[in-house]
Each structure stands twice: as C-alpha cells, then as structure tokens.
Image 1: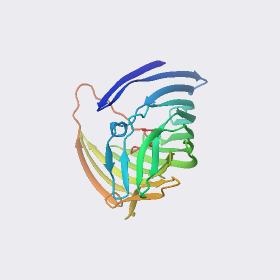
Image 2 (image 1 turned 60 degrees about the vertical axis):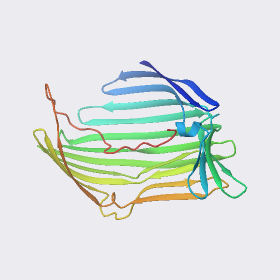
Image 3 (image 1 turned 30 degrees about the vertical axis):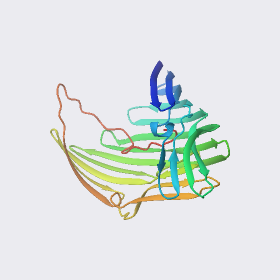
Image 4 (image 1 turned 60 degrees about the horizontal axis):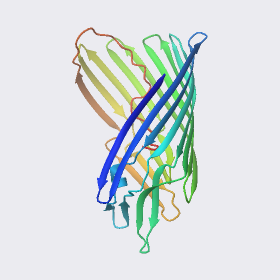
Length: 295
C-alpha cells in the first residue's frame, strides 16, 4: 500500500513570514503465511510544524520567574517512523509482537535560557536529533467464545535525546490489562495500566496510572452504565513533569481529586438507520494513552 498526504502552512507577522509545505508519504507491505500469520512492515515520513504560538515573536509572562518567547526562525522537524509486526489471529486468539523505531532530524524542541536577573526563558529551537525505540507485545484470548475475553499489552521503550547542549536517555516499561464479560444485554469490564512515561528534549513526563471497573446494560437503543475509576485512590496523580536542564530544575505534579475513587453513572441513546449489526468490542484500551512525543 502506498499513500501520500500534504499540507500547506502560511503565517505572517510583522517582518516574519512562514510559508511551508509538509508531506506525509506512507509505504506498507504485508505478507500472509501459514494459517493466520501475518508479517507487516510500514514506513512513514512526516514533517511536523510547531504551534503558531511558538513561531511568532511574542513574549508571554508565564509567572514571576518564567516567560515563553516564540522563535520565528523555527523550522519543521522531520520524523521517519518504521514498524515491523508479526501477528497471529484465530477464532479465539489475537496476538502480535512488534518493533517500532522513530528517527527525528533537527527536532523543534524546548530550549531554556537563564537571564542575568535569574529569570528563565522558554522557547523552541531545532535541536540535533531525537530517537525512539519501542518493543511491544499484545495478546487477547476468548476464554469463553463471545462471552469472556482477557487481553494484555506491554513492552519497553527507550528515548534518545541529543540536544545542542545536552544528551538525555530514558528507558520505561508499560503494561495494560483488561477483562470483559458479555452476559446477554449486560457487559462487565475491568481495566488497569501503569501510566505512560516518556522523555522529550529536557522534559521527562508521566501520565498517571489508571484503573476502572465498568458495568453496562443495553436495552434496545439505550445503554445504562455504572463505572468506578481508580478505586480507593483518593489523591490521584494525573500528571508529572520534570525539567532536566542544567540551569533550571523544575518538578510539576498535578493531582486530580475528581478522578480518584470516582463513581460515574451514564445514560446514552443510539440513533441508528438501515441494517443493524451486532459487534463484539475487542479493543483493549478504554482510554487514550498517547505518549505525547513530538506532537
């Protein structure tokens, strides 16, 4: 499979003009062999432009000690992603192992400057290089066909960050597990993960671990659900960020009391037309786990 995407960005501010084309070619090769086995390789190239706020020349006072300054000379970075995946699927099993590698040349990442009056300026410049290596494994099994399903996902990722004035490396492990039972019109679900850890530039980030128990009942086009998220956790840490700069040491932690030990009741109504299909939900993730790297 071959694909190509393109976009054009135009931005003017005072003496600065920003005009650039970005391209996104994709190549995917797939080969089926034996019974239920598949080997897939994909190659994707993507140019990434920073937010408008970071390519203008405006200065924003963040607090008494910090300010954010845009960089009109900032150029888009280029990501090259490669994925190799071996998978197997049968009536009761669904599993794969894969390896992912991202190479980013001249990434537009954070740069911190300490002023003479001991204040700190945050901006973005094109640094040297960013690399990401990730190995993952996934397995899903119908313990009772179309009734009880167990799934697990996990792996390791290694971040390599080469700045103009620093080098940072970080290894993290992750896992996700879920169990789903389909009992007529009732569905029972349990989910747990250990959060998401990553390193980009001089920022080491963590998105909090998450767990939930959910029960739902389907009546015609109506669905009623009851969920208990992060059970028995009264002080839920949703986010943590640490700056590793030699001139600036900063640790930010965000606690969300509304997300810990949270009980939710939901009611939804589905509008449908035409022929109806009964679908079995086979996705392992009940939430977005974007790693946030180079967005």
